[in-house]
Length: 205
Ligand SMILES: C[S@@+](CC[C@H](N)C(=O)[O-])C[C@H]1O[C@@H](n2cnc3c(N)ncnc32)[C@H](O)[C@@H]1O
Image (tube, rainbow, N blue to C red; front, side, top):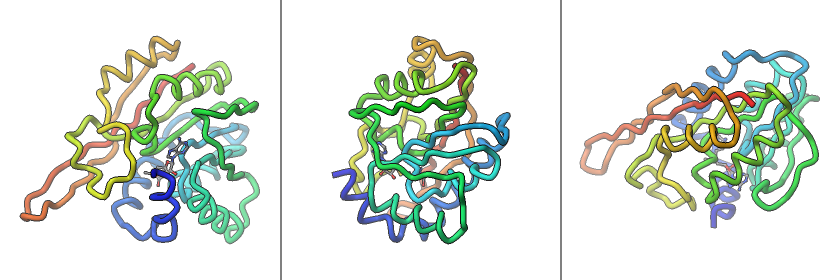
């Protein structure tokens, strides 16, 4: 269900201003991390590359991973159009498949809540990182389920920062920091509004 949703949405994904603004805020905060031009990075759940393509000029290489062929097709078009040589799109689900590469940076935006086994994917990220590698994940704070009105196959209604910190510390990450990088405001049918804060967690292996 999730992939059908993302495959169908891929063509219009970048047309929603809300998504572009969120990706920009996330990318700005990832760009403020100690990046360098030799860095090998993985973006998990890259979508059309709204975040990844903003980070790519600051690092050595980016493996842009997603499970939606539709999203990856849009990204591939941008890579060709912009003549980028350090971004490689790949269709792979790390929850069921292995990756034999290692990275200095793993980042992910608004994807963790689509993955059922949070502990499993975070453990995969830990093993895929080189020593001293950086993990940066942006997602929603815990919400009441009202964020995804269209039903995008989400597995979590956001996350508790405390619970994520505990899971990451248990895996060996340290230290774990959280920052609110953006707040998505949605207008209800009755004209009222709701705010959904988005955090960026950063941790070191
Ligand atoms: C909400 S979109 C975010 C896309 C992009 N990061 C952005 O900020 O615009 C979530 C993305 O996660 C991908 N996704 C969902 N489940 C996945 C999984 N198990 N492994 C990798 N990617 C997944 C979807 O195909 C989609 O591109």
